[in-house]
Length: 237
Image (tube, rainbow, N blue to C red; front, side, top):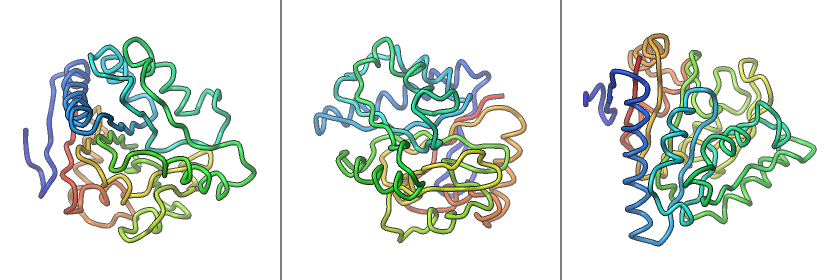
């Protein structure tokens, strides 16, 4: 493990299979501890192609999944069965095998406006047990994480440490569909915060993110440059 910045710990692995096993073990330990302590646990995961191996390993990991609630860090405002819906990815790749017993709580995406979907999702998530026990973030080659996109119309609000919403809508040129996202304060309200990145290109983006502090330019910096929650970066080529 290498400490690359204050509170940022980088774990590098020789390949993506080894990363998936290690990260799944870390998540499982946190969830098991929370179940033992309070009888339940909450896991927030990201969509995209990067976590597929992780989800495969995690789905077969011995956890008391019937006591675990799974949510998404962010979601596209598309139908639940849409090919680009993050919840479809989670249902097909994580919520199977042993993890089929987990409880999944999805965003509301069927209402008429992004704001209405965000408000309803906020109500739904209010019923969860906070703080989230484990959060796994991804990162795009543009430096976005969750749906904190450069140029996003609600980016400043989403990154505001004092903002009182847990869910906001987000529109940005690089996002494609309009999104719903947990805000930075909601994501930092966790026991275990992981940033999962793979490949040389994303490693270069990560290094660039560490070299400056302007989060509007590279939003993942808002996660890296905060002193509330340590960040564990899991990387493999």
